[in-house]
Length: 106
Image (cartoon, rainbow, N blue to C red; front, side, top):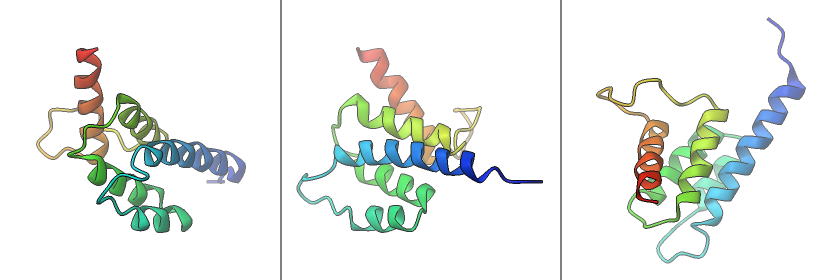
């Protein structure tokens, strides 16, 4: 199987853009340490950066766009499962749940 390196790089760039946009919502907030997230992004560990952002934003009252950016990153990385009701949800699934709940409030 051949790998289309250009397509892969484009996907990484889109994912990184979504992660950076989500990270921007956390920048400057008190008691939020983004150093691990930035290190993961530096080493192109996008899945780990995603997990950090989900964890950091978990208990914060962030705007819907935070979850939207994380959802787009998860979809780009193909982290979403088809069943949101399964017993062990991934971080991507939890983002999708939060996004759905927030969308219903609007």
